[in-house]
Image (cartoon, rainbow over all chains, first blue to last red; front, side):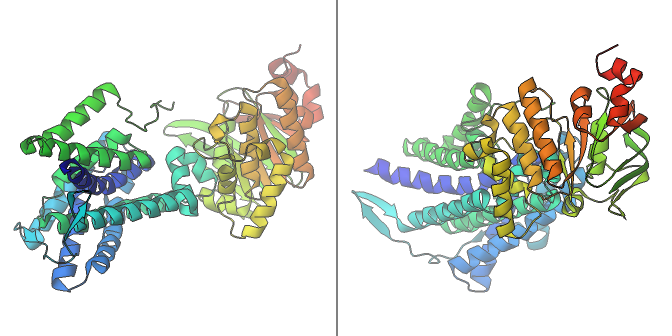
Length: 292
Length: 235
C-alpha cells in the first residue's frame, strides 16, 4: 500500500502549496498583480513561527496564529508601501516592483538575522506512524492536512458569506462598479492582502514543522511552485488554487516515488509549460476576454 | 437638490466637460440628452465621485460634494446606475442587490427594501438565486436599477437605461423609472433615446461636446425645431 502513503504525503505537501497559491490567486484576482514577494511572506511566517516556538516556548496553535497575524500586518504593509501607489501604473512596473520587494525581504532578513538556516525543534507536534490499510502514515502529515483544510473552509466562508468577502468578489469583478456600491476599494484590497498573507504565514509554520529546516531563501522555490499551482488551477480562482496545489503536490510525490526525486522540481515547471501552451486559463479559469 | 456650478472635467489633457452647470430639483425627473461622446457619462461619473472636477463645484442638499469619494456620496443618498449595467455577473441576483445596500447597517430595513425591490421587479424574485450573468439585457438593467435602489437613494442617476434593449423592454423600464420617481426618488436620466427620455422627464438639458446647449421643460424641447432635427429623427 505504498501508493496510499505517497498519496497522503502528496496531498499534505500539496495543501502547503495550496495555502500559498491562495494568496497569489486572490491578489491577482483583485489587482491583477502577480505578487512575487508572496513566497517571502511565507518565509517570514516560518521564521515568526520558529521564534515563537523556540524563543517563547509557544505551542503549535498559538505559534500558528501569531505567525498568521504577523504576516497579515506584514502583507498589508507591503501593499500600502510598495503597490498602492502603482495601482494606475503599467502592469510591468508593478511586476518589477514585486520582484524588487521579494529581493528586499529576502536580503533584509539576511541583513537582520544572518543567512544561517534554523531547524524547527522536534516534538512540537506528536509524530507517530499510523497504520491505515497497511500504509504507514505520519500523524503529522494528517494533522497538517487537517489544519490546511480547516483554513480553506474558513476562507471559503469569508469569501462567500461575509460582507467583506462579497466586497472582495465585487472589487475583483468590476472595481468601478464596486466603488459605486459604496465599497471602500482600498480597504478591500488591504483585506485581501491580509488574508492571503495570513495563509502564507500558516503555510510557513506548517512547512517548518514538516520539513524542519528553514532559511531566508526558503520562500523562493515553494513560492514559484505555488505560483505554478495557481496558474494550473486558473489564476484568480480560489477553488482553482486549492485543486492546483493538491495536484502539484501529488504529482511531485509520484515523481519522487518512482525514483526520480531529482526531477521533482522539473515536473512542476513542466506542468507550468504545458498549461501555458495548452490551457493558459487553467482548470477553473474563465476564458480571458480583455475588457475594452 | 442638486446644483452643478460651472464644472470642468479632464481626462488627462483632454477636456470632457466645459463649464457645465445644471440643476435638479427635488421630485423631478431631469434628463440630459446628447450624442455619443458628448460628455453625458462623464457628468454622471463626476456626480458620483468617480471623477473629480478640476474647477467648479457640485452642491447636493446644500452641501458641496465635489471632491468627495464615491462611498461618501452613496451614503449621502446619490446612487448611480452605470452605463452598460455593470452587474456583478459572477454573483447571484440577490447578492448583487445586497451589495447595493453595502453602506447600510440596519439589516431589518435592508430586508424590507429587498422585498420592495422584488415587488417592483417580480422578474428578479423569480431569478434571485441565479447568477446575474445569465440574465437577459433587460433583466440586467432591472437588476442594476434594483441594486441602486437598495442604497436608499434620494437622487438616482441613470446612465442610458434603454441601451441595447428591445422597444417593449424600453417601455417597461421607463414605466418603472416613473414609478420610482412617484415613490419619492428624484431622477437624473442620461439618454440617447431622446424621444423616450423627453416623454417621462419634467425638464431637459442638451449636452454637445462637453457644453450644455439648450435647456427647458421637456415639452419645450419636444417642440423645438432644432431638437427635432438633431435628436428626434424628424424634420
